[in-house]
Length: 142
Image (cartoon, rainbow, N blue to C red; front, side, top):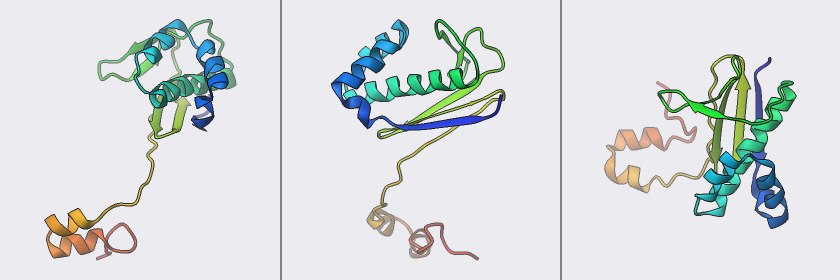
């Protein structure tokens, strides 16, 4: 199995018809979890992650009647009864990402926003602030 990454915008799932279809496609365990979320945004991200994970399983030639999750001692999820298949999920705002591999894998996605440097100017030494505020965004090169 190759290492694969899937990224999707979950905004379309907020449409009631599409959300209902996606919700109906996941297992009872996921439905129960999703139903506990207060906000639609969180429900949509959870459903989107499972839909992407199922797509990854299909692309890897794996068919499971049910996905049963287990959790390692550090909380990292795995699919019970599926050795050699590792995955990780990340989400930020409306984007969800799933990465899969035969090796341990991690992924992280984060929405990049403009940083308000006023707080840095107030609390950091002048030289530190200048380093943070350098045009490259990564500080000055020494």
